[in-house]
Image 1 (tube, rainbow, N blue to C red):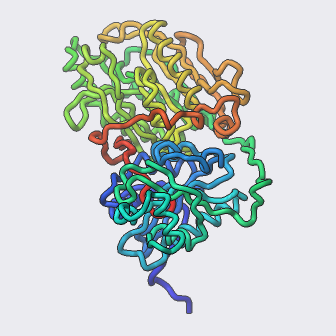
Image 2: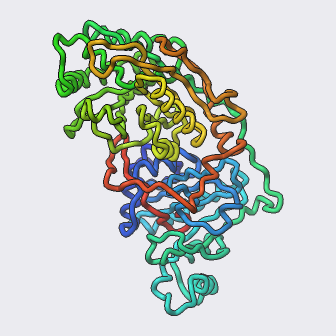
Image 3: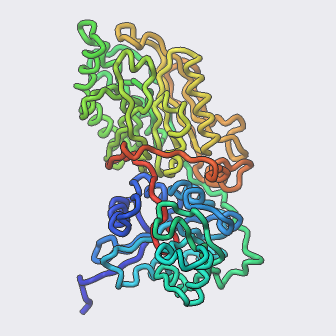
Amino acid sequence: MARTGGTRLEVRQAKLADVPAIQRLIARAYPELPGYTAGVVRGQLNNFPEGQFVATFNSKMVGYCASMRISGAIALKPHDWDEITGKGFGSRHDPTGNWLYGYEMCVDPKQRGLRIGQRLYDARKALAERLDLSGIVFGGRMPGYSRVRRKVEGPEDYLKKVVEGKLRDPVIGFQLSNGYEPIGVLKNYLPEDKKSLGNAAHMVWRNPYVDETSAPEFRVPRDVESVRLATCQLQARAVADFDEFVRNVEYFVDVAADYRSDFIVFPELFTLPLLSFETRKLSPAEAIDALTAYTPRIEKELARMALEYNINIIGGSHPTRTDDGDIQNVAYVALRDGSTHAQEKIHPTPNERYWWNIKGGDAIDVIQTDCGPIGVLICYDSEFPELARRLVDQGARIIFVPFCTDSRQGYLRVRYCSQARAIENQCFMVLSGNVGNLPNVDNMDIQYAQSCILTPCDFPFARDGIAAEATENVETLTISDVNLADLTWARAEGTVRNLNDRRFDLYHIEWDAGHGHGGNIPTSPPTSGSHGAGGG
């Protein structure tokens, strides 16, 4: 008779659903170090899913390790943790890299007798062997160094004495017993690690099945990972009631679904026609209250259409008073799996602040979809490069830009900045704007748009970096197929490689820790460092 139930220890590839449990585990394992945010852990998983492992015991998370591929030219030279990991996101993962770099390892302190660290190390080695990599490299902690710093001549002398058996360090000793060898000390690797005084042992394990002198040259296969994108250039028109507004939106959802599109994006402020059938002129405050009353119905209708038409809907943006009492410009995103998400506009324009009293949001994060993580930058937000970079660090390959501009100059600001975001982040940018006018609605007098789907500028993409674009100022639906695998190739082997060539040794973006929260779009910064024994 087969045994059922009982204790079960499992090591497996990490999943996005594990993110909260991984955060809690790291907080338990390293209470003295800053913790990871949900966005950083999602970035690690999105950027290289194969390289992230968890250990569970009786269904409880008890171990986690993170790794990425990188070239030996980077991994075997002096570096620090922030620089080599892209501030913790693992965004410097190189699919052509011939080394596996470990940058996080942690084990639940209450479960240290189960050889969980050993099992996670074994999973890393198995991955390196399966991928024919040269080996594994990481910066390992030296927690015993601070206790004896006055008895040795420096971190190099300390490491030498530990290797010779004259001093004992539990972390370095564990790594040595697992076949790793030190090749030096990484100075100022992780300043937050006070026990190691910021130092790390530069550790290497060499794959016995690969001749390092003739290691294979890795190339990114030119795969096809096709996604069909639809952008709706919507006519701003008066409607008789809410139902007519929904019918206008549903028409384009239906058409995009008939073309088997994976996504459709609507323009910024696409819900303002709901003010056109008011019986009297409303003040800005009254207009916001009127729009807020429609918010639950808008979310419900978008979710219904996403499910019924089997399409992911980026619902432009909708001015509304949110739960905290602030007036926000919010994009509601309804996915075909039934989930709904919200992305606030981070930077309201001077006009929005003056006219509607709109406040800027404080949350920017990817939204997980069946086509991978995506981002939403509402109009003006596309003109701030740090926002797109944050989304791409978390794994976004498509960023949607609902916009509303009243002049060609305004439109071109959004267009040119979005093209720059596509090039510098090697991602696709999908723009959707309003056309026409709403005579009886303040602040919607005239509109100018030429919606488009923009690409990086390199060989796999359209000659001019434009996958598709609409005719100016005409209501229409513009559809194009894009190949996400082209982005992977361009980032690894393109003529320029903007993401990999960033100078993390010179600069990075530091996000304000005070604005983080949970949910679909947490925004805490990546403040944590490498925590565990042997790679993070």
